[in-house]
Image (cartoon, rainbow, N blue to C red; front, side):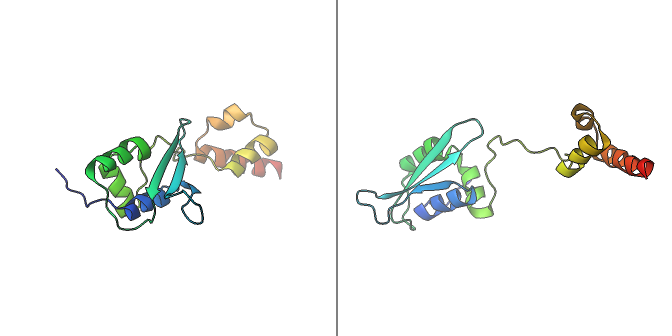
Length: 142
């Protein structure tokens, strides 16, 4: 079993910053607010919300509150949390990755508007095919 350092408020905030959570509330200048609040919009429509007690410092979390924060607020396991905080690796949250061979938008635009190809035809092309087709257009039209 891997042993992790004791998580702190500072680690919690670092996680939110690396994953680019939106800071929605802070403790500065507001009476009755003793937390810094972050939100993260997920592709499935959920909005995660986490609160960090103020001040955000090296104060550690107890085991039961930490398990609650990981499960119910951050929606990650401990390895994903520490990978994010220590190595800057954002948790995999099902965000679709663009295909490696996606055609550049300007190439698609030129094939449709200049060459006159149908969108469905362009969608079925590899990058090499699309470039070759555009080059053929330029060669034939000069």
